[in-house]
Structure formats: C-alpha cells, structure tokens
Amino acid sequence: MPDMHRGMSLIDAQGMSIRYDGTDVLQGVDFAIEPGEIVTVVGPNGSGKSTLIKALLGVLKPSSGQITRKPGLRIGYVPQKLALDRSLPLTVARFLSLPERQSKAVIVRVLERVGAAGLQDQQLATLSGGQLQRVLLARALLVAPDILILDEPTQGLDQPGVADFYRLIEQLRQEIGCAVLMVSHDLHVVMSASDRVICLNGHVCCEGTPHVVRAAPEYRALFGHGTGGALALYQHEHDHEHNHDHNHNHNHDSGHRH
Amino acid sequence: MLDDFLIRALLAGIGVALAAGPLGAFVVWRRMAYFGDATAHAAILGVALAIGFQTSILAGTLAVALAMALAVSALVERGHAMDATLGVLSHAALAIGLVAFSLIRGPRVDLNVFLFGDILAVGRMDLAVIWTGALLIVGLLVWRWQALLTATLNEELATSAGINPRRERLVLTLALAVVVAVSIKVVGALLIGALLIIPAAAARGFARSPEGMALIAVVIGSLASVGGLGLSWVADTPAGPSIVSAAAAIYLLSLVLPSSLSR
Image (cartoon, rainbow over all chains, first blue to last red; front, side, top):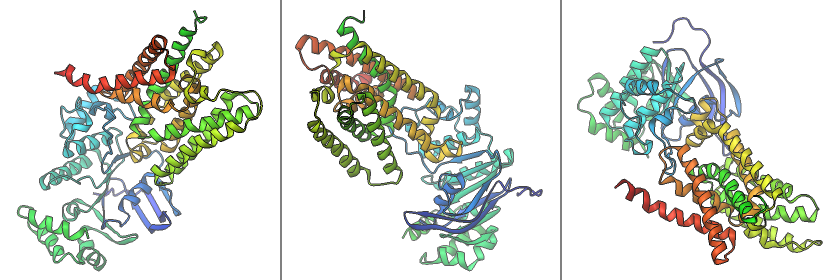
C-alpha cells in the first residue's frame, strides 16, 4: 500500500549509471521508492541488482546521474549474507548492539518479533541460515527504519522458509509502515507481495505492478528465454496456491543459472 | 625502579602488548596478516632513510610505515589480487631497506637492532615513546570501537548505518603504522607481525566476545613478554625472538586448553 500523500521519495535516483572495473554495470537507471511501498527488483545473475542496492545505500558512487535520499532517512539494511570470519567471536546480542548499543530488554523483544526468540546468547557463527536471516532482520528493525532494504534475503532458505520470511516482512511493513525494497530471483513469491516490480538487466527493462510486469514482453524476453516453459509455471503458481510446486521451482532455478 | 633494565624491558613489552592486542584482533578478523608484515618491513627502509637524512628514527619509521600502509590500503580498495601484490610490496620493502642500510655513510648502526629488536637496551625515552604510542592506539580503537566492528562485519551494513568504512580502515592503517614505529625497538621489524597476530589468535580460543578477545590478547601478549624475557635471562637467548616463541607456546596451549576445560 503506497502512501497516498506523496511527499518526497525516500530514495530517488535519476539517470544513474554505475561503472565498475571499466564496464557500465548499470546504465541510466531512474528509480524512486515512496514511503510504505514494497518494491521488488528482479533480474538474472549479473544484471546489476546488488550494484543497484549498493548505490542506493551509498556504498558505490554513480559515475553519472544522481541519488537523493530524504534527509534523516533511516535505512534498515539486511545483507545477502554475513561473511563471518570464524576468528571473530560474536553473540547474537552483541551483534544486535552494533553500531548502537541496545538494552537487553530491547534485544529480547526484537528477537521475539522476528521469530528468533531466545537466540541472544548464541554465537552468530553457529546459527542456521534461517536463524541468521531473522537475526539480520532484527538488527535492521532496531533503527526504526523508514525503509527496509533486503538483498536476496531468502537465499539458502527452503520453500516454506521463504514463504514464512516474506509473510513476516509483510506483517512488519504493516506494523511499522516502512517501505520495503527487496532484491530477489524468487520471482513468483515476491511478486505477489509487491506493490511494484522492477525488472533489471543493466537498465530498467520494465516496471509496474506484478501483473503488468508479468505480461511485459521485456520481462518475458529476459525470464522466458531458455527456461523451457518456466514462465508458464509462474502463472500456474500464481493462479493456484503454492502447494504442489516444489519440483517446478527447482526446475526453474536450474534453468536460470546458465 | 626504572633503573633496572629488566623492569624497563618488561614495561616495554607490556606497552607493546597493550596496543598489539586489540589491533592484532582486527588484523586477524579482517585477515590483514600480510598487511602487518608489509608495514613492518617498510620500517627498515624508514630507519635507513632517517639515519641517512639524520632525522629521528621514530619519525622516519612512522613516515615510511604509514606510506606503505596507505599504499597497501589503496590497493586493497581497488580490489587488486592482493596475495601476490602484498608479497611483492612486503619483500621489496625489506630488501630495499637493507640495501639502503648498507649505503648509509656516517655513524655505524647495528642493523640487528632493527631487524630483531633490542628490548634489553630500552631506555626511559624509548619507554615514554612506546607507552605514548600504545595509549594513543588504545584510545583511538576504543573511540572507534563500535564503528570499526560494524565495518569489519559488513561494509554495506556499516554504510547504511552512516559509518564510512573507508574512514574506519584508515583508522586501522594509522594505528598499524604507529604500532610498527614504536615497537620496532622491542621485537624488531621481522617479528612485529608475529606480535600482532599470535596473541590475538591465541585469545580466540578463550573468548566469547570481541572485547574479550582483545583483552585476552593483551594478557597473552604481556605473559609472552614476561616468559620471553625470563627465557632470555636464563638461557641467554635473544629477547625479541624469545618473546615471540613464548607467544607461540601460548598459542599452542590455546588450541588444547579451552576444549579440555569445558569437558
């Protein structure tokens, strides 16, 4: 549900290009996200999804164009993964106290909220993929974010795990009213939860509601190509509920990677 | 009390351990081991230049170590294949430093002092330098601690929280150069890297938090100083290498002890 009173966008990128190692990873991207919106960015590997996120966060500087962030914007960022060196001993509670120290009560509460209750004294390195994902989300919530930015948050989760995680994100969005920007290649699940989908492949191929994007020829060209009917599977999954599609998904996945 | 050279040596060792503990922890966490070596090796060139231009050795080592650390840091940022590059820089700095040393005309200086340290010859002035440097580094690290840890974990995450990872990297680079400059007299350029890494690595087995690991590294570094100096006293071995050997022994213990304690 995007806010009706459209004031200033939370983040607004105009004609943004990002050059990395001599090649343009992104070219002339216009992107804006409004308060309360859920936007999903989809695109094949190497399409510049993570680069877009890094630029919006301010890690990468655009080689042309510009990015404006709303003054005082609070970003809750959920990284794709944490390259946790085993040489660094870190409990969940200590991790949640970075970079701002948090009281024990706050930590217990936020872990409960994301369905990771009781994990505070565990070492970060011993968590399962799903647990770590929730802890990363908990940390992002602690800043009372205006926008949650999630970079492929469901990698390594199984199908029910992915569904649970997205349900949680949707609930949180409703509670906090924050915008959500998500990068994903779990196309079907994400698309149903999004207000807007942006299909990326070095530039914005197409953009709109999930329905519009799914019908767009650019999207079909990108995701329909060489996947041998995988596109039909999305339709199929979307029209019926997700109950008998596990195998199809694996097909779709492997069909994509090459 | 400071009249006794052994006491001075001990205080020098503990001073270095105080700075090397927390800084070494970051070196281990960020996998900067080679980075420490390159910076330390560059210090030899700094010593040669300082003697050649008749300026203070501290200033010379500090300047060249800092230049090297900044150069390496810039290369890391550009994403160069670091392994080989660091190897080249590290060994080249050492070799060029040794060549420069041989070319110096003037007062004869014992190269061994700077390669292996001469902790037993530490004077009051050296002590003042070591402790000033160590306290500066500890102050810097404590001040930046939360931001440094966040940037070490994940640079994007740090940026999203308003932390500049480049600035934090610069803090570590600066601290590394200072540690090299003030501790060259204690363990020598060849073994400074060891004093950074071994106590921190040994502390890992006993620690459950980053702060714990830094503190335990200080304790282990200090114990290694005491043990090494003791060994040097009893067996008449060179002090710097003896301290590093003691640290290595503690590291070995740390591999065995924590698991047997918890059993």
